[in-house]
Every structure is written in structure tokens, then in C-alpha cells.
Image: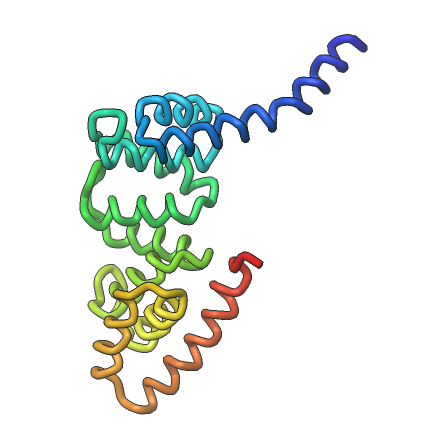
Length: 198
């Protein structure tokens, strides 16, 4: 029994560095353009439940890098990572629902996943959520929310959001703009500040 406990303890102590090393090796292979090697490393980690590897595997399937493009498999891996809280995977999953790639188009599910990603500071999701509110796609049209989401995405440097914010503002009354600016400040504090890196 003592030998088994010692072996399990040693395995737990040394497992994390191996996973971290494999992930770093996967990123290095990816950056070097060795997509097949990166795919192999990411796939092994993804099968072990590593959410960043799952996201990367989904991206590789979506783009056809290292493997034939396959939206169904991309969706599968994005969903695995999204369900674990990976904001970028949530954003990609929403894009797939919005575009009907690998899954039937579903604006409500796109909204759900964009909202999850946006609430974790993902500027792309914030921009796209703003666009949904501006157009009334999957949600009731709401210029204040459209402006607020676009505003915080723009403040994070998302260029398209800056343009979108200006277009939305043209449709608003001064009272709506004041409400939207207040909402933007609230969203910034709630959905961006906690996720900023020091």
C-alpha cells in the first residue's frame, strides 16, 4: 500500500510539468509551421481534458492546419474547451452556431456562448454581442446594450467595435447615450477589469 501511495504521489508531482512541456512544445511546433507535430501534441493533451489543447485542436480542424478541415470535429473540440470555461473557445463555438458551421445555425446558442466569452473579457465576443443587440439578432434590439458591449470591446483595442460604436451612437437619443455610457462603465468594471493581466 505504501509503495502504491509513493508511486501515485510521484506521478502527480511530475505529471503537470510533462503536460506543460507538451503544451509548450505544441505551441512551438505550431509557430514553426509544423502543424502535424503540433496537432499530435495537442490531440494527446486534448484527450486528457486540457482545455487550451482542446481549443487549439478545434482551431486546427476549423482551419485545416495539420489535418483536413472538418467543422464537425472543430465544433466538438471547441465545445469541450468552452464547457470548461475557455473564453476563446466559447467565442469560436458561438461563431460556429452563428454561421451554421459543423452544427445547425442557432442564434440563441450563439448568443449564449458569446455572452459567456464576453463576460470573461473576450473583446471579439463583446463586439459580436454588441452587433447582435444592434441588429436584434437572437435578442431584442437594444442600442444601449449594443453601445455598451461595443464600447468595452473598442476600449480593449478591437477596431471593428470602434466603428460599430459610432454607427450605433447615430441611432440613439442623448438620453440613450447617457444610459449606454453608464452601462459601459459597469460592464468594464464587471467584464474586463477582473480579466486584465497585470
